[in-house]
Image (cartoon, rainbow, N blue to C red):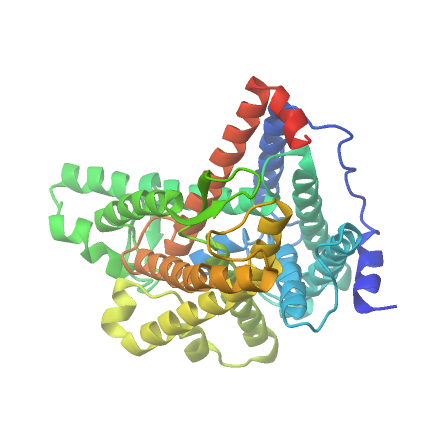
Length: 462
């Protein structure tokens, strides 16, 4: 029995929603997605019983909180960390051929999905144990009874497993998109509105002695009414203290418009059909061929490293401040005062994005070989190229690999620029949110088309 078989059996322990017998109507899927979002918000708003502090001894940067959908001191403390980490580990193992499995086979893919769920359950216990053992929830952990620690552990695991079950149910067709995307989007939306409208006074993340109203709109109104309004401070200098600025708001709008434009851009590959001689068409390859996947996987990896470093510092007393500075997204402040760390992080971020982009097209069946086989099965051909899989793959590689390389760099650079200029919801969060919203738009447009033209369902096999 292989590792995947063992993990798949563990995945069967937790109940899962069955796949719907027939396609669930769009209205019900929207309702279920809304209910899943409300359940997550409830988890993220419910404090853990038995703790004295929200775990601030292990600080989570905004990017970690957003990418992993983690909320400190609540039932959503682990967020989607176990799910995405499990998927990331298995995808890397499959991409590196360390695990031999054919993901094009339905049964093998089912086993892979169950194994991902099983590994996620194991990681729920491991990460929950890490938070409890580190003692981040108590001022004096040695004085806390063992049964209280066990209760906190079970709460963390219970909250994480509910998130796993919600994500699985949505992906099986009861909701829209995926739970991972939904929870990330909720985190970005919350961060965006806090940056814009939070009326609460907050200490600076870089200079704790400095306090002022956090949200840019309430701060602007307050400073105008008190006669202390400073254009340069509100537009730029406020970012030095880690507060939102109008520069960040403008950058947010520009990046959103740019991402929408790039997402809709296509590179066309000419094709023809042997059955319809003289009729030519094109295959539109998306300019952002790997979409936001490289940035998502890179951010997940770096976020996980940051969390484990913080726990190691708490448990073993290891000094990780210097190392963490190289794993913190750059900002205007860091580029001015800590240029070395910012440059190293940026180079590492772009390098990892390229690597994950290349791995992703192999795993997701977007490589030239898979696309060539798709063309042949569809009865299509490229003018001037014989219908040979190897020849077609060689031709398509001229488009696919440069597109993968270029789009991976492009999305990574956009995310970094967003962080530098202080976009609302962080640069990476904004990039992910726009991609998720665009994906929801495509899904809804597709669903509405099927509802308007029922005959299409039979043609598409729906």
